[in-house]
Each structure stands twice: as structure tokens, then as C-alpha cells.
Image 1 (cartoon, rainbow, N blue to C red):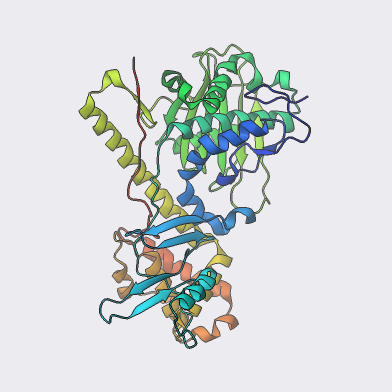
Image 2 (spheres, rainbow, N blue to C red; image 1 turned 60 degrees about the horizontal axis):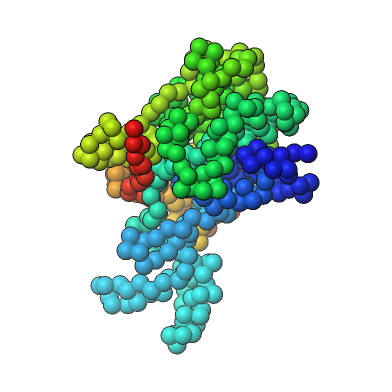
Length: 468
């Protein structure tokens, strides 16, 4: 009978399937033989949600290219003053509820709503006894600075979720791909019992947390790790695509350690020391979980009986705890600010890259977006003007100078300057998208040109002290 990797209880035949790489992160590896239903539910509430929150910006931008069941997951956003709510789903931002807006110049009050909130608009109009017989459906958004109110936090819960996901993923791959029995999988060996017990103890009682022990397991995020990922893929002779999850594990006979790394979405890299007294034979293993697309690419896994010729990582300061012996209060504040600033900058550019990726790869989404823009405008304009409007929308960040777009020569759009939006359905869409993308790439070459508007202004680093 199968048993839970962390609690060791026997699993029922009808045990619930679990995504070992979180489904909210685009995970595709599932099993009913890795953890119990109760343990999985506790993890979802306590630790897994904290990990998903860190990458929610990226995933919502990538939504048009994600599997169908992840496309419509909603991200709740707010206006800067907190009065208006928005949803971002499938690459689009819409009002989450109808709202009133007063034009300060004219004194006229508007009720704004989206296609999905028209029922709420009708109810509000009835309550206020408004005559809506001649109102126009203009699907526009208020002129808000839209923000995600939660911080991109660096938290202990997320660190422990990383450890749990790594162990569970390799356990499933060993069972499904290599047909190993429980008693032969390294994930279940006695040398890894301490780290499995550590995860289980925390999930069942967060107050039992031993931060010194966590410090020995979670080595930290590796901000300079991208070059190492290339080395790893070359060693295994495999290829990872954009936004794939890559997990690697390798023993080291000299240090007697067993290290693992998880490159989440290929953009941030976490290193875990599963054991510092590894006595078993040398080996290394890789698992690649595709994220983009609807399952047309398969999970990749390879194992070899030799260790990597380089270390997977080392201890860094990029984690949610510090050694109090080394820092006074002023140094602690300085350290937290330094970590937060570096991570905020990194995630901001990861967000820009995701927005850029969608503009360059999501053909159907771009076409639908142009159709929605035509519906919004109502008046006829040229297709060149339509493309330029989308460029300005993409480069509307305060950091960008989108007025530059009006002065640039977009020769690739010249053929569209005499074609009206009324003829959009009759044109070859692929030609128009191709030319728009050439214009998009031209703008990217300009200084400080980043597509999209990053939705968070701060990163919270939840620091906990280790008393030595």
C-alpha cells in the first residue's frame, strides 16, 4: 500500500490526486500516491498559497498561453484610492463591479461597468431610478492607477513549500517514470527523514518552527543562477523552453551533501540542502515541467549515476530570516531594504519580460485584443492608428516616454494607413499581427521602453531572527 511521503500514513485507494508542482504555478505532475488528502489540504492553506502569490503577476500576464483551466484564474486589483475593484484574467483587465465616477469639470456622474457586471449596473440604475433607455455600452476603464494590494512577499511559508514540492515531485517521478518501489526511492530513505519530518511538523504546528533548522535546509534564492541553469541543461543533454519549471538534484561526495534546486518558471532559482550527511552512491537527476501550452509537450526526466561537476548553489541572503549575531537593529533594516529593493527590481523586469513574451507569441490573444479595441472605440480609425494605440497602451508606464511613438517612423505599418477598422474582419490577421510586432520590437529598442505597468510598489521581506 502507498504511504504519505511526509506523514507515513497509509493512503486509501481513492486518495485525492495532488499536483506536486503547484497547479497555481502551472504544474502538471500529479499523483494519488505521494501525500494524504489532509496533509495536502493543510499545505494548500498554510504554505502553498504563499508561494503562488509570489508569481501571480507573471502568471496573469502569461494567462493567454497557459492551459485552459488556468487562463481564467482571476487576480483582484484595486484603484490607488481603494474605491474601485478590478479583475485581471486571461490577459484582460475588467471592472469587478460597477462604480460611479464624477467628472470634476462638468459635474456629470457616470456609472461604469464591464460586460461581466452589466447585471449589477441594471440593479444600481433601478435603485437610483435612472433612465437607461438611451445609455451607451462603452467598455472603457476609469483612468485609474491599478495596483495589486498584496506585496510580493518573501516568506518562510513559501520557503517550506519549495522544499515540500521538490521532495514530492522527485518521489512521483521515481515511481511513475522509473517504476521504483517506495523502499528504493531516495526521497523516502532514512537520510532524508529529518527534512521530511521538519516539513510535516511545520504544516501541523507552525509554532514548532525551528529557524536554525530551516537555515540548514533552505539555502536561499540564487539571483545570479541563470547561467548555471544553462550548464545544467547541457550536462543532461536536455532543453527547457521559456517559463518551464526545472528541478535538479545532485549529490556531492566531497561535501557529503544532497542539494536540489527549483527554477520556478525559469526566472527565480531556489536551492535546498536535503541532507548534509549523504552517504549513498553519487547520482544526479532533472525534471522539466512545461508551463506554456495545453499539454502538447511532455514532462522530461533524466537520471545518471554521477554528480554534477559544479555546485547547484550556496547560501545567500535572499531568504526570510537572518542571523541576529551578525547584525544590530540598523544593519537589520539596511539588509531588509537591500533584499527587498533587489527582488522588487528583479520581479519588475520579469513582469516586463512576460508582457513582452505575450505580445510576441500569443497570436490569438493579440487578434482578440484588437477586436476588443475596435469595439471600445466605436468610431472608425485606420488600422495603423489601431496598432499605434496598442503600442501606446503597452508603453504607458511612467518610466516610458510613449510620446516618442508619435515621432517614430513605423514603415512596416504604412500598408495599413488607408485601411479602416471596419475592414478588420476581412484582412489577413497574421500579416497585421506580424507588422504590429515589428513595430513593437522597434519601440523596445528605445531607452527605458518596457511594456506593461508593474502592479506592485513594494516587496515585503518577512524577517525572522535566528538566535545563535
